[in-house]
Image 1 (cartoon, rainbow, N blue to C red):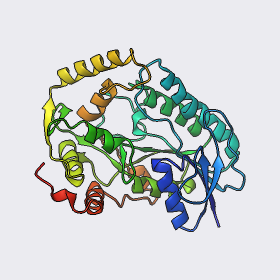
Image 2 (image 1 turned 90 degrees about the vertical axis):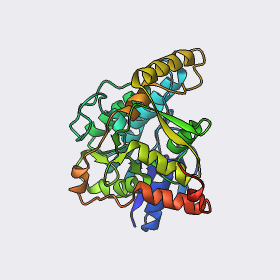
Image 3 (image 1 turned 45 degrees about the vertical axis):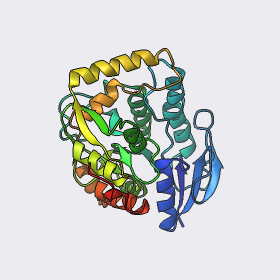
Amino acid sequence: MTTVAVTGASGFCGSHVAAAAAARGAEVLCVGRRPGPVGRHVPWDAAREVPDLSGADVVVHCAAAVGDPVPGSRAEAAMRAVNVDGTARLLEAAAGRPVVWVSSASVYAPGRGRSRITEDHPVRGHLNAYGRTKAAGEALALAAGAVVLRPRAVYGAGDPHLVPRLLSRVRRGLLLLPGPSVRLSLTAVENLADACLGAADWPPGAYNIADPAPYDRDEAIRTVLRAHGVRARVGHLPLPAARAAASAAQALARLRPQTEPALTPYAVQQLAHPVVLDVAKAEAQGWSARRTLLDYAHATATAAGGASGAGTV
């Protein structure tokens, strides 16, 4: 029986990977500060310690500090301690075991040329601490011969970030988005979990992971709103106004460095410009995406007792 160590197994992505590994018959070590949904808990503080990976055959590193903290804040320093220094500690403990390191498409350089991103797209010019620290962490992982996965905007059951943040932005039946609609890649957490569990045998390097096809931004958001029974319409804020609002929000947040700005230049960049991942490299290894946003919407609406029929969006 294969033993899979999953770091961050109490978190969103890690819990799905751990559960999927157990469902496939693997023994699971849930490595992190809190127990995961299955298997045996191995306590680990990524910001302070080298983990005990005794008995593990494969390591899937999902543990990460996420968010969009104010530049220069304590939160940014804490993010580096986990995403960069924690990676170094993990690689030390892995000691030659296969490592699958979950990165992010946030490592890719912003700007033009992202309507079809391959893995050789430049990794630079990051607009926030998350992108910078994930890029630095994955550089360590790549140098150590790991497989690095780059999903974008991971969503699914138990998501504590993406969808809750979206729903919280609805005001009086209106959700304002920066600029007109664009094409965006998203990644169902089930698709990411499949890749995590298959990638240990892939050649070392970086691989994009995303749903089968990109989505129209506005229609995808309407799909999510309907699934959660939220009555709202989508409006468009002119890009200059959105950028100005993001800069102002970030400036105000510097006065309260323990809180994240309501809007940031990074968020505007991610929502207002096409970001489409080319997943041919992962598909060449036999992986394929099996879930879509419509699957998520159907499951969410069903769990909520048919909330998808609540009103017109």
